[in-house]
Length: 576
Ligand code: ARG
Image 1 (cartoon, rainbow, N blue to C red):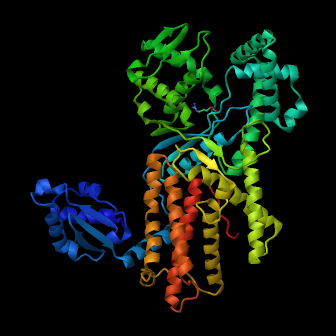
Image 2: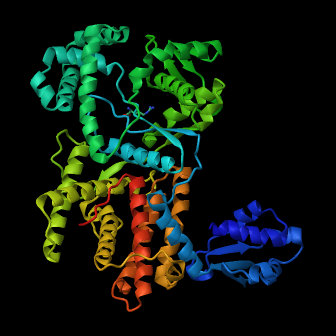
Image 3: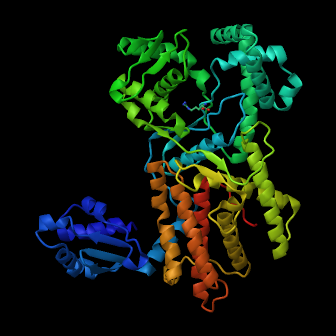
């Protein structure tokens, strides 16, 4: 049951104020001992011509409130505080979770609506670093969240696969390319020749001309240049896809910048016809002064297109193709201005769907006490970060298994280390608000007691092992309401409330495009559950009904943590 709606309905009956209005006024008190919900009476004082505390008292005295079976109400000054009856909540929530299983938290809110989530979008022929991982992890999580809420999600990877740099690469490859090296580690080799090009170009201007020439040929579709470009693109994609696979990330398409290049003339025509293209130092721009923004360049002075024009063409394409309800760009915050310009050009051209385009920015990635054998100067490659995380997790798992005397095969250990290690990296990206810079530190991210993936996965695995152990003894979680309603202690109640709020957390995560609303909620569930677990015997209780009720709680906790981790893109393990 949705308690807030239920309470709103009751107060609405008494006050004759529409239920939706009441709903908006209801608060969640800051402390559990103040109740589960509170209704402040201040705003009613004017219409009801009474002091708020008196209104509160009147509401409380009404039979519909005082005689209610679902909650108990009390007055505190101008507030009516509601305490949900614990037995009822326990039955309600636990039955709901057990019935829904992995669908707990899902809804049909988004039915029939298309949401485009564009994320990752690395530049081909360039290393995939930890910043790309931020958009990849966030975007993957957002796609899963929208899907959970019933939206039809289109996952797009807007590859940086176009632009003058490909002319340079073609020239460089013809001069210095080494096919063996290219096959071994394509990105390393492409980066090497790209860097070399820039060094040599300083003393040899003919290289610049050759590169420009090659890019022009590429744009005109000359087969030899096209083949080379395609080779670089394909080889880069193989490398990226390996990483995506490891992270459990999939895309519906890889329509990168090149895909939109032949759609730009139509954009230019459209803007011209609307009288929006003006000349500025030889370039064609759209003036955005009325939006308080610098002009957006559409065509460079040599007539070639740029990043922004390709983005404008992409929005128009996406609108035609998908008629999106939302078009989300998960791209670092430094590009905020670029997106404001793109959306404003669309707005100025009369495309109202500009308002449905959202830039979801994020902070920087930093490192604390971490040393990497970085292959390329200062940048940390995602692959290196993942490998280190998995190796370090493996050490902890081996050590834990040794102290606990559990025996696991090498294969099992590898599999667990891979999942937990990668989970620990993903979690670091989604554990705080996305605009904040994140700091990787081994000590923090692998802390089995901290706000980490290992902690959550461990809580899950241990709870699953309790359920298995019970099963071996022939004891099953109860589904009987009379039995489940025994879960009323403070500790049990705190777990159940945290479970109940999960559904709302999923919706809030979508509304704000903040996966951390989910990580925060499952972390709360795990913490509250562990407090309960540390203070109570689950299988050892004398009351056999109590055992079964608590097993049902364990089951609901496992289901919800797993479902939450899945929304973040993290896999669980059954044993660790
Ligand atoms: N490839 C770009 C980069 O690595 C990001 C692309 C973002 N998406 C977009 N539609 N502009 O910086």
